[in-house]
Amino acid sequence: MPDTVTLLIEPLPADAPESAIEGTFREVDAAEPALRVGELSTQRGDGIFETIGVVDGHAQEVGPHLERLRNSARICELPEPNLAQWRAAIDLAVADLPGEGEFALKIVLSRGIEQGPTPTAWLHAVAAKDSTAARERGIRVVTLDRGYARDAAERAPWLLLGAKTLSYATNMAALREAARRGADDAIFISSDGFVMEGPTSSVILRIGGAYVTPATTGAILAGTTQQSLFEHLRAIGREVVERDVALDELRRADAAWLVSSVRLAAGVVALDGEPFPFDADETRAFNEYLLSPRD
Ligand code: PLP
Image (cartoon, rainbow, N blue to C red; front, side, top):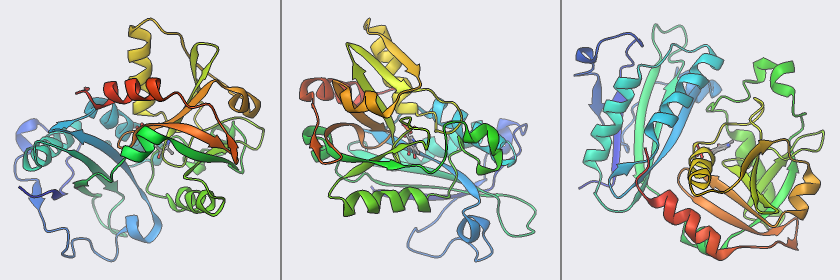
């Protein structure tokens, strides 16, 4: 069985019937050229994506990921995606992947070719990088200035904050800055002093027995992993809160995690070079839940 699957997808309009889906996928060799040089995704980062975790043959949280794709398309004024078609593409790819192990399945919807008539879409699934060390031993994190205030999304909607766009060059630059400072990851702080998110993850804190995450005001991405974990915590009787979180509260929190679809929950062990309280047992429990099949 291959451990990489790549599908080129002819995106259907949102209202196309399910009967139109057949024949809209073409499996290609990821090592061969597949996109045209006029692609606006590569030329301008003009498109949106989702990265979905696949664990032992089960694609996690497909519904929430597709809802977020639809929301990103709305913010970016891209044609509304046909979610049944995307679900069929994901099912096809997962059926082709080995039934054991962890995979990162990325789906992309780009504005397409310059002056072209339709958007371009594809799916690419690869074996996930080993996350064992981050899950078991935790991560060193630095705080970095995001360069804009918490209300930037309302004041400047053209920044497309809240959409998961392909323009991740600044997020990758933040990870390089974290590495330069001797850390594994970063937490963005708004220019007005509030905790936002990691470059590829959401932030969860434990403060006095409650689990707290920064409110999704539009300037940060609504995380599917954070939402799933909060549903689970609520179901087992814990208090969960979404609200503004000042930087000072992060510094004084009882524990903190960065959570995302493929690495799952990584506990913070150092913040800006200072040791930070790490709860190994709770992190293990989070990851046990996050590795179980979730829809
Ligand atoms: N915030 C940002 C900026 C991200 O890129 C990601 C995931 O890549 C997340 C949050 C976490 O989202 P999810 O849990 O859906 O993977």
